[in-house]
Amino acid sequence: MRTHLKTKLIALSLFGLTTAAVFYYPALNSAVTVAPAIPPAPDQISLPDAAQHPVIEAVFVLDTTGSMGGLIQAAKDKIWSIASTMAAAQPAPEIRMGLVAYRDRGDDYVTRVVGLSSDLDAVQAELMQFQAQGGGDGPESVNQALDEALHRIAWSQDARTYRVIFLVGDAPAHLDYPNDVPYPQTLAKAKARGIRVNAIQCGNLSDTSTEWRQIAQLGDGGFFQVDQAGSAVAIATPYDDTLAKLAADLDDTRLYYGKPVERAEKREKLAAAKESQAAASPAALARRAGFVTSKSGGASLLGEKELVEEVASGRVDLATLPADELPESLADLDLETQRDRVSKSAAKREELRHRIQDLSAQRADYLKKTLEAEGGAEDSLDHKIFNAVRQQAAGVGLSYDKAAPAY
Image (cartoon, rainbow, N blue to C red; front, side, top):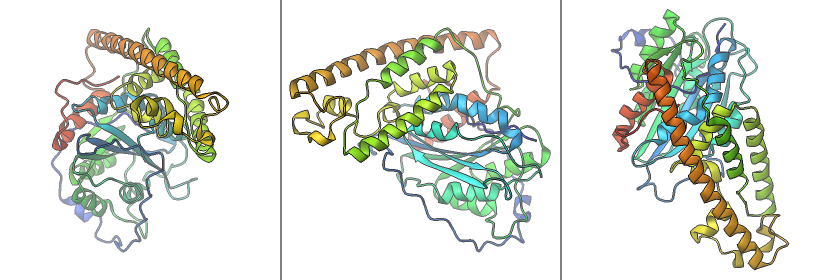
């Protein structure tokens, strides 16, 4: 069995590919109907000017069969540090993440797709639902998972976007399924569209190593191995509990406006995010606090139609906002009181941001010193992901020369 999911991944160790990859697939049928692209969700956030704000779009293709339990838990714990690692570039990019969970034919599902979004709370809420189950016969539906990562994700076309897939698993692909798109065909299309594919192997199964190296080479990406649980840095700090509490207070400063149905949908999403956060460790919540107060994390924290930010930026005037679009907490107040409440929320938010940023810096320094005392973390998944992103994202003008991995 396997222990699944590794969302803190990616490192760049390019390996020469043997052309034998081509010979694994001569008999596979390539006449397959391609699934239509899923349109972006309404709450996917785009920064105002893509020409000035580079974007990172990262989709994690994760084996969620029974042996992947350790990695899946690590992914749940480290999604925010992965985002922070990506966000450490100059200039600060917008971060969008998506997921393709896969198992095998005959399991509860073959694939489950979570589209790209800047709302990482929503992505994490989906991730928290994944459990390691199924599998058992060895190979898995890797071909279908990669095909859907390419065709069922609404990838952008902007030249300043670093588009990347991280395949994470411990078993090779089923090569004997009819009406399956062989992965060399999918990877050729991904490469033509400027989407890199990195292959992260959990464990050391030799058949998987051979195949994952081929996938990385064909996908213009990197290959690396981690242990079955993901080889991630997991160190608690004295700052975690305080950061978790401050982040919760920061969340409480948000006020959403819009039509009643829009506000109801937002309340539902916030409730789902809060439920997933209740199941997270203080360390994971501390990582989230650091990300959502970074230059790249604002879209994840606020989303669309957040009144405090919109009023502060001048994009919304309370005096002209229809009464039926006001947040419930402001609906029965006069205009002067509404403005006072919004102003106080803005001031509190700014204070909390500064406190979180200061404590996050102290937390990062504590982790750096702890890791140095333990001999460093260059073999960790965290460090490998950082190296891969640093090298690959340089092609779209992102520099990580003054950055370090986030833990």
